[in-house]
Length: 87
Length: 283
Image (cartoon, rainbow over the protein chains, first blue to last red):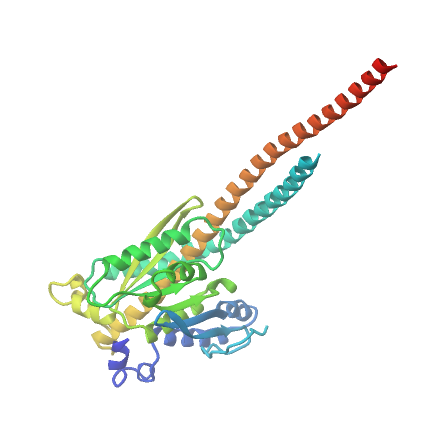
């Protein structure tokens, strides 16, 4: 993680913006998926669906918890949305 | 008479348990088929990394993070306990100036580890299998870990899927880019990296950082798929033995029920006959 901070000034634009390589690769992949035609497009959209709950712990107790979800129609950006998932 | 009623109730409940566990076994078998294909295909993700960087579980590192992969649901045999046992062993093994930290994937691991290692848990991710596991999801989780957790190495503990009856607890070691850079200098474990030429405009540090991050996401992807396979396989065999136990129990209960039924009929007959004999003797 400290490497990410050190490289922020130098390097490609996405590194300077604070993205990790993994986030960059996934943004590019979702762009490629959007370029597909049907029926491959909806097939590929299933590979973009995300749902998980994450909680950071501090001093032995859960401090902050969030639900991350991306459904088929939403753009593939990791926007945290807490609450019940809507389908 | 009263005991035969109790036995009959027990038989009914054991029969329904048998049906449920049989159904769970079928469901686990069908889920296993789906995940197994994905897991086997994902093995090609980490093989190039091991070919390039090798596997060095004994690499020197101060800040260790132990990533335990467990399931969200129970009734899956002993795989979660095995993972937790190995995580605790890894924790004691990797003791350096700072204690290691846990990142836990899966509800069952969290429940077991929070009993005695609460202070060392840094992050918990649950509900991963609500939608089928895909690389986007795993890479988002990897992203969160990369951004929020400081580490020199991450050790991923998971159950590798051998077959429906064999699961191997495994550990995958992911060094951070600084550690890779340190070890790739002369005398380190990754010396052979120096002999590679780097094409393109990136510097060596950048390439190593990208590699390390992608290696983490790829390994995590394979590890969670393998663990999901192991979970379904363990659930299949657990439910199978449960069904077998239920049918054994049912046989024993049926015998007991029949015996008690026949005994009560015999008692009634004896009463009737002795009553009739008493009447005859009296008249």
